[in-house]
Amino acid sequence: MAQGSVNADFRIVVENVMNRWTALRMAVEHGMGGPLGLNTAIELIDYVTAFCTDNKNIDSIDVRELLEEIMDQEYETICEDDSIQEISVLLMKYLNLLKQGKTEEVMAELRLMKPCEMWIVSGAKIKYQRMDDSSSESDDQADDQEEMEVDQTSGSVNVVSPSTEGSSIKFTEEDIDPGWTQVRGRRRR
Image (cartoon, rainbow, N blue to C red; front, side, top):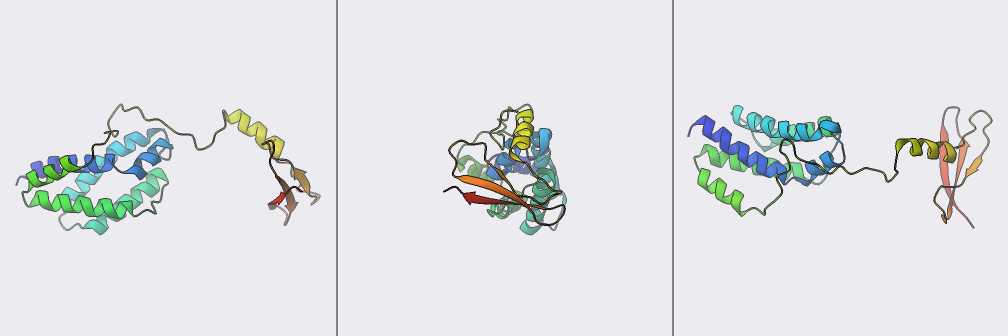
């Protein structure tokens, strides 16, 4: 089978698998890849395709290490759910089938997969989810200034009420070592 055909067919496989990968989508939606996280995901498809088809002696461990490194460096994400291992094995399975000329078998398996939204495309609208529920950065700074009263020079203890009403926890701050502040939670009686 021609190398160009394997590359094109394998790119379709990689695109289908990456669009179904929840960890990658969550990393993009939560802004872990910065404002260009979607572009990085698009480039990821091309890079993984080239990495797998250009290297002759490649196995699932190589693919797993590549994906772990990309998720860590580009998205500051470490997947602890074994999804990278599953994806690596799946990609190698399909690549080996394509190299054996079993393109129809691979495409039939792709058609049997549960339908998904193909979100890794140029110009896609990604719904970014904020990590916190505050309305603006200036509010965060004002809240931080109101909630945190630390007297680092005298070593005194300040009791600071949390900003949420009805809370049963008071926070106290103590100077442990110069330059270090320990925050402890205490229940109100």
